[in-house]
Length: 161
Image (cartoon, rainbow, N blue to C red; front, side, top):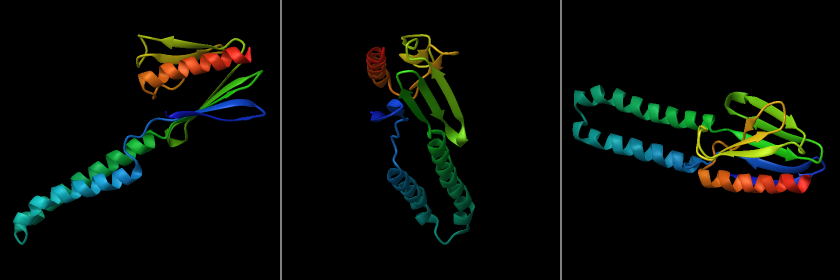
């Protein structure tokens, strides 16, 4: 699962969440290399003719666009959520792409895990409610992972009270 409970610290239990990456970096290299090979294969039939120079810029531009799109996807997927459950404070820090950071704090006695079965941006949308505002958690997880996370978080919050 793309979340794990880290070893506890003096501040409390720690949870780290991150989005699932279906294409690891090694697969990225193989995909771009295979695409370049398959795109370049038909060029063998026009080798030595002026048609090659007419097609080559478009094929190189296509490979560059695929590379850029996958790199952009990796940058946008650099989301990490860190949740610390302490006896007197719950703290959620969300680090997003391009250095974006959001913090949320609340008293764990009042925090509730709310599961929105419908009506959220994703099915089984999870929020934490109990501080000055309601915040989402794990929106990038799959539906089953959000259900498991909701049960796990609720149990840990009950143990804190």
